[in-house]
Amino acid sequence: MTATKSLPPQYALSGVFDIHNARLALLLNFLSVALLFVFGWLFMAAAAWLRHDFAMMGVGQFVAQIRWWQLLLALLAVVVLHELAHALFFWLFTRERPYFGIGPGYAYAAAPAWYFPRNQFLLIGMAPLLLLSGLGILLLPLVPQTAVAWLILFLTANAAGAVGDLYVCAWLLRLPPTALANDEGAVIKLYERLAVSD
View 1 (cartoon, one colour):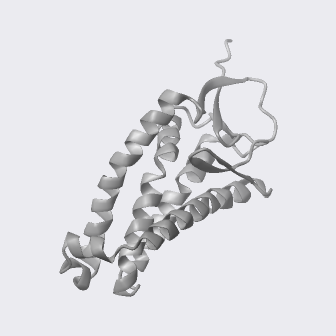
View 2: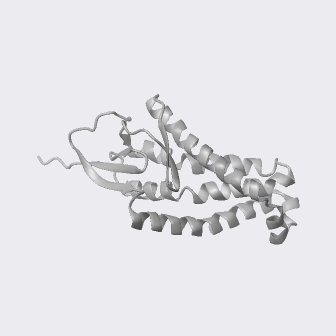
View 3: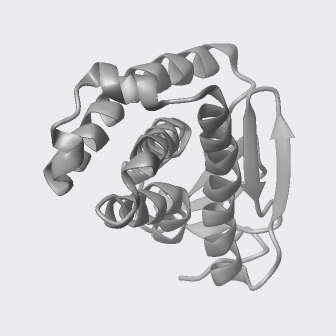
């Protein structure tokens, strides 16, 4: 099954992920804050395991290394690279340039004219977490010590910021492989094939 620009006639709307939904936005923000601590701890543990110089550093020394401009740079880099990772897979599956946008508290890459099979959309959704986290962990032992704190900030913000992607992917995994997803940016619509009676 491949991405298509026309919804097959035997498909019906199964659910809608809408970031404008106040309850959903509140839940995702709560989960994102919780994930900051979880992923922060995981990436600090990875750095300590991969680097002797970081393992010898205390939490106070780590926090003292962080500058406000590093935090802002990490957040900006996360937003840009996170959406580019989504866009790469949109392009790979459609060979069309995706759309980019910014809303209050979120940014997005989207392909609103396309319907993606479940497994393709899982790759699109997980791309930033898998690609950027994987690359970041590979870079941890290679960057200078002064860049480790910045890299951990980047990795943590990217992973915690993927909470919406994780939510949609968890929802998709409950649907059959024949399900389709249509990403309009702030709204993602999921479709399932209707059962055909004999």
